[in-house]
Image 1 (spheres, helix red, strand yellow):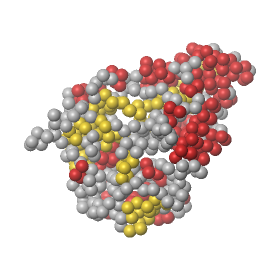
Image 2: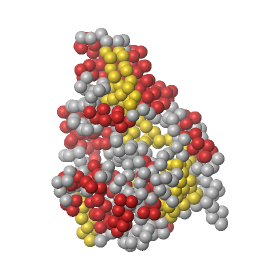
Image 3: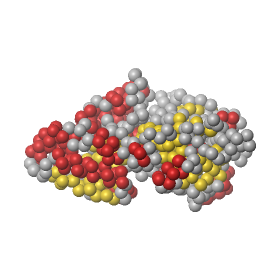
Image 4: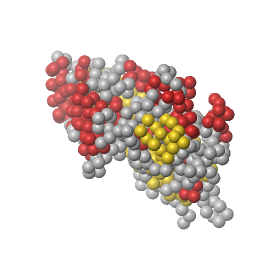
Length: 544
């Protein structure tokens, strides 16, 4: 249900090495050093403080670099910082050492002051950054964003030209992921001030510190190029000379371009995922997304747990993803999708240890028993509910499937579907008014369970159904407070919270998203991380 569109990508979450090929961009020796990548939509900006769309994140992730990089969707590696830092001061202080001799693409030296400037700029209210909320874990950020404190008081300071110290408001286990994200990149103050409001509005009004430099981009262009950055600290490991991004909005057109060798990597949409399953370049991996239906707990009937359980038990989630959606989605086990977190003790994925399987089971006979009991407790024989959902085909189709299945097995139930524009639907769900069932989704901005469990935390703005349980809140807050520095205790807290939410049937978990791509076998070393998309730093073209 994020208004942040990326932090709607698919934010997440397995990294794979992708493969593909291209027939152009060869050197005089016949070696191919150019890759062509599909971009699904136009991009709006290159300014790290203002970016929200997926396409821009992919381009910026390849042309800029922060303290860390995402090695995979769940692991970080050092970027322009020399190593992964262990926090001190009970998890609240991070001291980073930058690599020596760092330079921007224009030759300017890159120092810790570029981080201090960038982070202060992002939290300054006049910048109007849509991603400033991600800084709230940093000391004083909340007061600065409200306009009650000077940006100079943000918990970040340069100890010297290569040593950066960051103070957090509380221990934050996922801070390492934030340090690898686009919102936390450094910015060259001289360049930002030179271009003012036009900074980042075209590729020539930017400066770069990552593997590539962007060329030929403006909001009106549908193709642009990433060219190898000669000033990048790790340029020796950048094998491609160029990466060309091509906006291809029509999925069928993208498939045709891929088939003819004019694109090396494309994203499949809708039922293409099913149709291309036997293609040699087919790849599917978790996107860090959960689709779910929130019960509005302000509706009297939905406060009855038997009614909630009955509706959920009528949904055959495997049939939904395999026979209706056919887009690569998987049946869920709970509020969190796969590959967000693993048990430190045994390495098992969190989704494999869901404590209450019934919350996502298909059992019409049991559903009827709960239904009859719930109606009896409410003293009614019929129930009419309004469901709001986004005006997106996959959402509409899922809503209709749920409607048909629930009405088929539950006598006296009537569900009316209201299809609305996404922003309008989100606004309605956040208001907790005008609907009984709210069909929404959540895509992780970073791989941490708190990203999903916040959806059920009392009074959270993203808690669409107004669900509230003191025991759930206790374990959620414990995981992000008292136990924040103990991976095992924190994991156990989330397991207990999941058990409580599942037993309550807090929401209807419908499906977990997958990203499905086609990649020709000759393009090697391409990585994918949710909330950042494709990473081309280590990509190369195999010439066999």
